[in-house]
Length: 247
Image (tube, rainbow, N blue to C red; front, top):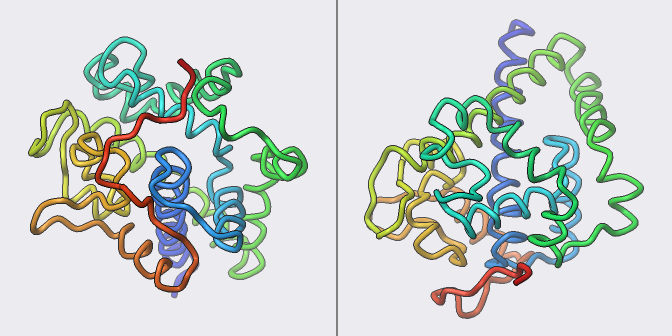
């Protein structure tokens, strides 16, 4: 197989891994506490998040919780109804960083996720984690594949995650009374995140598929991990529960 084609395929695979970790760990687990992870899976998620995205979990959680606290009204970090579709779809990184780099907002919305010594030593150093990820690709498949895969992964991961905020608040079905939309195609590409209307209807539910015919790939992972004893689900997950943010 030509190295460039292999690089594209590897990049898409790494993107899907990063997307899975984002929805299961950062979103359903840390942000909404619908899933609790055992030590082994927690460390696996922390490591994979670090080397595939460089995201600091407490920052991602703070941005997402603020979105729920101010959905599509003033204060929403990335509403296409306020900022415009293109600004969110193609400029989501900049909108994300406005909150992620604001220590006061991170402290408010993610007060339950203080940095620990492992964050200070390793996981807060995004460039180090990403360099390790690229180095692993280089060792496994060589420089051409590593460079192509890194570019493909970066572009597709950023665009897909932006689409959850952009497409997810503009186009699709609205079975529940909120401003978000469901897109099954986007859900297939984002491990379930495209079922955004469902999520805003019941944010603490670990399963994003709620109607017949809806598919949530992230839920498949959760079910398998649960059977293996690697995680537990929130007991009363059918209830609405306030997010742990400051008053």
